[in-house]
Length: 99
Image 1 (cartoon, one colour):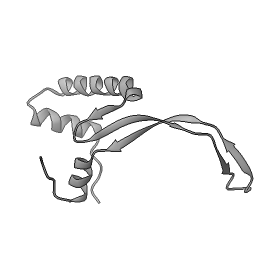
Image 2: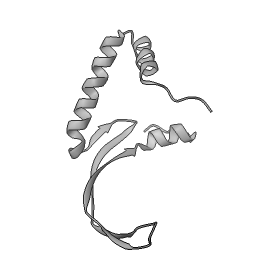
Image 3: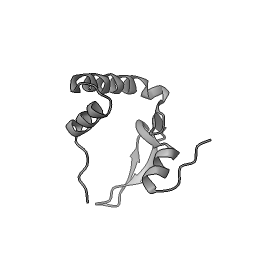
Image 4: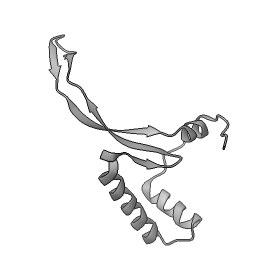
């Protein structure tokens, strides 16, 4: 199985492909992540890749797996990433159709 691309490898690849310096790519990536973090509560979309969304989970009853005792799990907010259909199709090898 191939290794995952590291951050430095990604920066190098993007710099070479777009004729930019590594510093420019790092600045762009930092700016993109800052915007994504700030806008996640409203839904932040990277077209063709996916969307960051804030989801409210309701309080619910659960079980302690060690003792089997019922416990109350409080309500909370969680961040989820929803993968775009185009990304799923590309990664899973399904044909990509453009409209």
